[in-house]
Image (cartoon, rainbow, N blue to C red; front, side, top):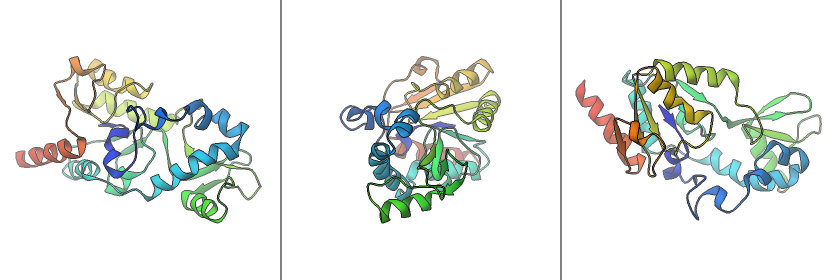
Length: 233
């Protein structure tokens, strides 16, 4: 299973590329969500990320996340690779999870290497709005997510590639497959002899190679898919 921002929109989290409503329709990611932006101007960086961080931490799983957790509990889902940083899969109960873009569950100090829970960031933002959360050493904290210009975590990507190679069927949910290298995972499944299914509101580059394509909202299509799998016993 590969999930993107579209799996979390029903939880009140905007996706990135939808016209007018997508996050990048109103801001330039290079200016507010890159490692250079963080290093050059932590105050400006956190003026954007602070509100987003709080929204992600407070969000709750929707029916799509819960359906995937049920599929895992039935033994029919053997790994979820997600580009999302919101931790909603984990909150829903998914255990076999590769968060290839990191998560808001932690924050890192690039100066001394200390790691802090996301709760510390929230407390700091609440106590001093407009001021970047700081490490004990005084350096600004970076959210534990992969920013533009950073490498993906090797351990998570190795797990994701292994799952893609072993998958009989990879279901692609809520992603337009435009962000690499994660967008290449379904192709790995196809090259390894598996199949791909697409559950996404907009077309993807792999639609023509999918065994089926579903354009319905994933919070509708995934629960129905889980019910049909459960009915098979």
